[in-house]
Image (tube, rainbow over all chains, first blue to last red; front, side, top):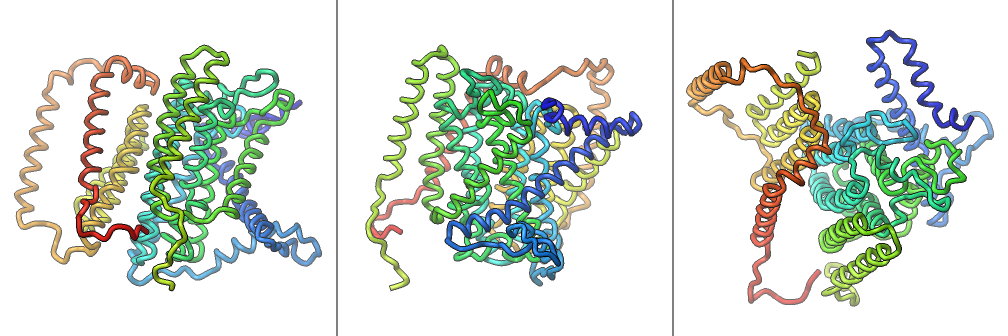
Length: 398
Length: 172
């Protein structure tokens, strides 16, 4: 019975496809998969916007949205209807295009932003047998389409003919290019150990249990470091606090989408959140066991429920970090990426190699942990050198 | 020829044509990114996943951005007033037509054409990786060394020259 529940989406898909003639089946199947992604993840986005405002409100000791419910009734839904008026508002707002803007590029930028982000969902395994296109090189596909986002950010920033937009785009691209390297290098460890770029294979490799605990990669020394690096880099890739310099309100208004209004702004917003979910989904797949359950006695819970709950848990951590940490400075951002994360990611690759070739016994735990801890301590000290944490002098505000 | 091949081919050619003929250099760079994506789609239709994804990753994700940055940092984004065609464009077309005819003639008369097409080899990403790590490990290492040297050179060029009369301290 639980097996049937686990495979319900796959069964429904096969059932629906069986109605159409033989020749059209691949196309209809692809369309239904696209419809699934387009229905589920923007839905998660809608919930997340409200959730984020409510959690930030809780952190900042205020209520957050709590009014919108079902019209003409007393039902308030704790404010979770807020995204519907928000969406209607962004649809009905005037679409302003600056006079000096490059009209075509300005129009295309939000579309170019959303397209690669949606493409990235094609390779993520949402559940058992629930990968839309099971590419042999799924991981490579994910990073390849992710690279196209930078083009859209540049298009948005350049075409607006606004200094804040251009500054935001420059910051965003510099940040994305820098943090993509630790991101990819931390994912390389998983590829080395599993021996495959296929994301379903990577999940399958983690779907074993010893003493009732799953073989998730995060439970190994290299996996823990890899996950930490991946997590930080994915915060930076999705422009979230403390790496939200590209859209720092107090410095450059809204960064590269300053000159966007109405639904184009909503598309950027959507693209940013969908990109965040996609990269979290990849992190879950690589390190947190994808759709598998952490303990063997909970394997009866459907796989997609595990995936979505892990996704929402990490989204909650992202919001928590946003409510807690201040924004980094540009030089701190770059120093952190190039002087700390990159060397640690390289050492982590070495550790993954040692882990792969040593016998599966306690010495490899000891050796790998020792190398990682030593590297962490030395690199951390190196990063702290030449930093004088004295009283800050405000040059222009005295 | 499948319709997908025709569509991606047309998109690639249009992108390449616009990359040559548009006035604004940034538009040209973006059109070139379109052409690169079209080429990647063509590779994917030929079942060459690794090459296709690498094409997007390297050309669209890195080279297009690099070109755009180079344009932005070296000149203002204004479009030039005069026509993009130089005065000798007739001669250019003639030369390129001749080159095309020559290459086409050479290809059509080559000894490789009459041979029977061998069955397509199964080139999975795993095969590519295995080949890179065993048969072609020396070229791979040499390329890695050359790239490292280039990177160190770039860092040395970009290093700030320490001048004596600069006011020490006052680091932000």
